[in-house]
Image 1 (cartoon, rainbow, N blue to C red):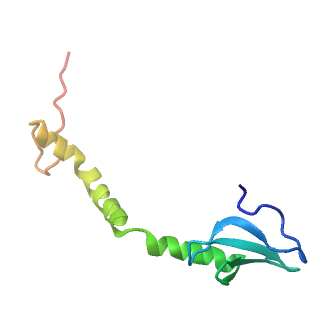
Image 2 (tube, helix red, strand yellow; image 1 turned 135 degrees about the horizontal axis):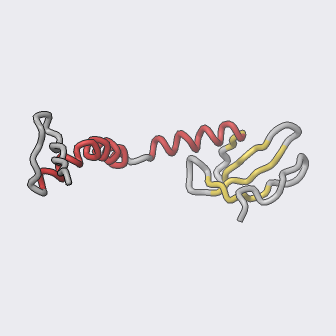
Image 3 (tube, one colour; image 1 turned 90 degrees about the horizontal axis):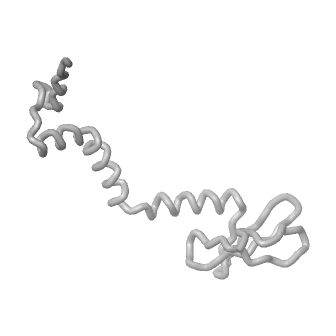
Length: 108
């Protein structure tokens, strides 16, 4: 299903969309006037396209779980220290800075 099933035209009845309301679990209907689209949910909330996009963006920000951000905050430092952790786990020596010591290059 397309997000907006057909191009809304002024004077035509509302069409049901595949777009959910940012404030409830219902879907939105869309209609048009001469200059803009109007989205309305079954509970009567009305949004312009600009308001709908802003509300959707705000909902994403409000509902992004903290553990997701915590995961990102955890992965970045772990990624930075991964070589040191691998060196410690495999018994390789560390340099004076705590980073894995450069492997000695053998000469043929």
